[in-house]
Image 1 (cartoon, one colour):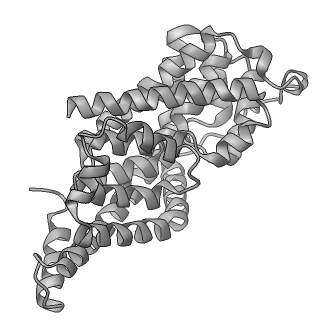
Image 2 (cartoon, one colour):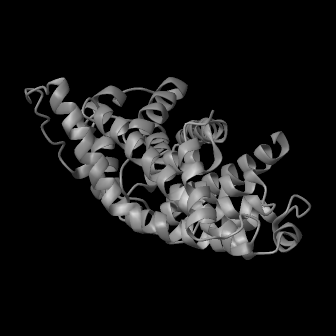
Image 3 (tube, one colour):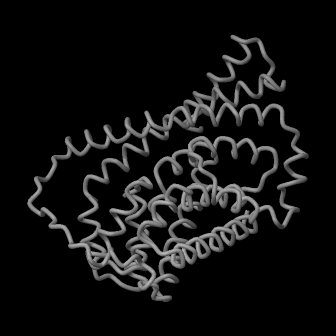
Length: 322
């Protein structure tokens, strides 16, 4: 029995008994989609962001910098990508993290593995994917995201592109890390996790509700053959087109993913959806603008090219596997 069976039953009861609609009608199908997805996604978002927020109390940026300092090749990249899952950051903190990591002795390629994994496999995307597409798809997305961060960081490290980091980075003095900071009790860590969860929820819930609302309209009214014709598995360019649209898109993933769920229900391949999601989360326009402050255009171009190629490859591979 699905853990969300109660939400499904309640949504069906409201649609049929309260509103008197048929689940097979356009309107009834749309209303059921909305009433079922909103509580399901909200519940998962609160739960997963609480877990990640609690884990973050053990993985502060200074500690992550110390762990990754001096680590090279595959070990360092793998460690950075793995830690990035549990220490997501917003685009506004990309520059301080980048500077802190390089000044702390973290190699450029390892730093990029962290910077790729942290925004891509963030708690909002994971919660939404789990709620909308199930655990299996979410696990595959996490695996591909970590793999892409690992390979992308290794490639950038092998190219030895430190010369294309803005020169002022190397002249900044390293800050002193306070290792004597008081440790938190388990109760305090749970409290911090709950505070982080509430903060994330308060930020993204309007996007989730709006996205699910649009998705509900697509689910109930958009003709399936239209999606299949333009973006279905028979269109070999569907994946790169989705990535090209997603790279410059300034959108909150919380509002985008519920729409893609409805499109998948209409025939859009999952690999195309996941590629679009990766492009929106890992190559968002705000993060690229901010990273330009510390990266010369050549390095930023290499980073975008490596990531775009990798994401397109993931999309094709996922479509082939599914």
